[in-house]
Amino acid sequence: MAPSPAVRTMTNGSPATNAKKNTSSKAGQMEVEAGKMLFERSLQKRNLRYTTVVCDGDSRTYNAVRDAKVYGYVEVQKEDCINHVQKRMRTAARNLLQTHRGVGKRSLGGRGRLTADLIDKLALYYGRALKSHVGDVDAMHRAVMATYYHVTSTDGSPNHTFCPAGEQSWCRHNAATAKGEPQPKHNYNLPSDVAEALLPVYKHLSEKSLLQRCVRGKTQNSNESFHSVIWSLISKDQHSSLFAVEAAVAEAVLRFNTGNKHASTAILGEMNMNAMVTNSKRAQEKDLRRSTGSAKKRAASLGLANIVRRRHRDGMHADYAPGAF
Image (cartoon, rainbow, N blue to C red; front, side, top):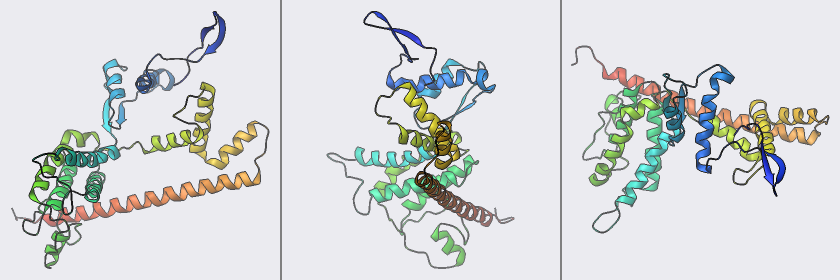
């Protein structure tokens, strides 16, 4: 947390050092206090209001800011990180396995049922349904339920009405129908008790109140990426002095914004020192590896999103026929 004016402390009954303590909160409450501090000083320091908080599931900071009415009648809105919302599917499915164990209950897990591999796929499909329909709550809802009915469909009881139609549909069954080809076999053929147990989970995670909070597709990726740079410089599990924390954060900001090579050169320059050739080369290699990896991930993400969006759009057009209804 940012330091406040130093407070005189006493050691052995006499004035000693200038302490840097600026809160009496417990460790679990420090994030809340820091959040309130950032909002309360935004008008004075930045001449702006932070009107939205992107949460990761822990709403304590948002609740504290909202209850404090830091901007008077201007309310602060809550949004959910779309990546953390995606993780809720995996957590909910795993909890199902735990709650359906015991005397007189047949486990939902096992071969041909709710396996760990299938749970990961359900979370992946759920995340794709959200991210490929950013900006449209109704489309998000339909896409989420489409993944449920698609996965729980069987050869004996197919249900692909929610899946997009057309030859380019990601649903193999609707694509085969559009092409006039035989229906392919279903991959999962989940038993009815597993499908029934999953339905409440999908209904809960497709509630429009939840989807509305992540409709813009915002994430905490940039924050978490920046935090990882800080933790690479200073441990988050051990106590450190205020000076050490401030130095680590300052260097992390420089590295995050300009790269390792420029950061190391700038810091050494402030100390009237020159960077060694080997150090500069190593820093440049780190920057190249980071930028290359980031570019690949972004390209893959955008490519998948564009494919899903295009197929969904084509399917929506294929559903429409003038005078058909």
